[in-house]
Each structure stands twice: as structure tokens, then as C-alpha cells.
Length: 215
Ligand code: IPE
Ligand code: MG
Image 1 (cartoon, rainbow, N blue to C red):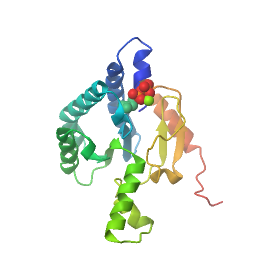
Image 2 (tube, protein in one colour):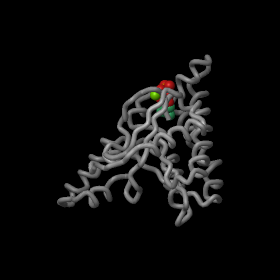
Image 3 (tube, helix red, strand yellow):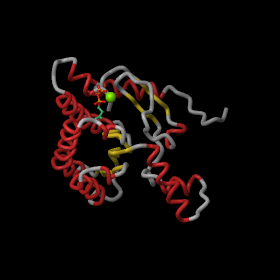
Image 4 (cartoon, rainbow, N blue to C red):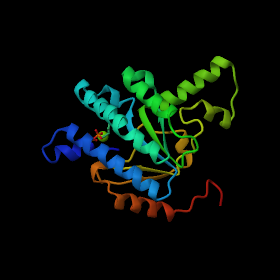
């Protein structure tokens, strides 16, 4: 969800104003993705590297996460949507870690739609924690065994990864899981990434020929 800060600064507003707009856009996009028949919608809300931002910005991001979970989670459940978190919850304030674990625990079984929140998420940390678990157990792993040790255990690999905000890099997001994902980059800043922009990305994706290394 990149570009919130620049979007706000362009209008002479605070970065936090941009993050609030980004949160609202994320809520709208999740509903739209669901309407389009998407089953898993993952949002990269906070990376391990983002945790090194100034405390003031982190506090407002944490505030947004708290309020989002307090006011939106019941609505998602009512619509038979589940939530799931991927990331290192030990890096977050205790009350947020609890909101995230409870949000997952109380999710409906057999949900038709899952919103996956990548929070305090870093691909390198995820891979290392999986490797260390395997080393501790003295296990030699195959792909299926390794995937069970990742934060994303049980989730499908992403078909399409969209990065708004103009940068063309992965920034420590789902490196292992994205081995065969289709990538879509756009200069549109996240708060401006409308449902129509999402549809454009889906259309672009639909026109691709996924061969997975075969011919
Ligand atoms: C949002 O965009 C990403 C989050 C960490 C929530 P940024 O905060 O990276 O916005 P820019 O890149 O400074 O515009
Ligand atoms: Mg950014």
C-alpha cells in the first residue's frame, strides 16, 4: 500500500492524513476484490523495516490498526470473511498482537474470503524463522514441509502482486511465495488506487500467459 505519505505531502497535509486515506482505500478495495471473486486479499500494511520509522509515525499507524480492528472486524465476520495475520507479532505492542491473534481465532470457519494482513512482516525474517525451526528439529525439508513453517502456512501463493506508488521493487514482501506470482507496478499512489485501477490490474493479469516454466 505504498505512496500514502507522498499523496498527503503533495496536498500539504500530514503523513498521517495519508495513512488514514490509505486505510479507507484498503477497506474499499477489499470489498471490491471480494465482489470480483477474489478469495485471498493480502495487504502489506507494515514491514519489519517500517518499524524503524519515527515513533510518532508508528504511533499513528498503530492507532489506525487498533481502530480498524475495533470497528471493522465484526462487519467482516458478518460477511463470512476471515482475517489472518502474517508477520512477527512479538515486534508489535502487546494489545495489537492480541487484536490480531483474536481476529484470526474468532474468524468464521470455511470463510469465502480472507483478508491477510502482513504486519511487522519481512520475508527474510519469515524464511529465517522457518529455517531455524527446521534446524532445531533436525529436519530435512521438502517444499511442502518448508511452506508449513512459513507465516503463510495454509495460504495459497499469490497469483498477482500489485505495487502502487511508483517503486518497482519487492521490499521484502513474500519473496519465497512470489516465485511464480505475476507482478504489476503502477505510479498511482495508494490512496488514489481506485476500484477502476484495480480492475485495470486484473485485466492486465488476465491477458498474461502463465507457463510456470513450461512451454
Ligand atoms: C504507506 O506508504 C506504507 C506504510 C508503511 C503504511 P508510505 O508511508 O511508504 O508512503 P510514501 O512512500 O512515503 O509516500
Ligand atoms: Mg513508501
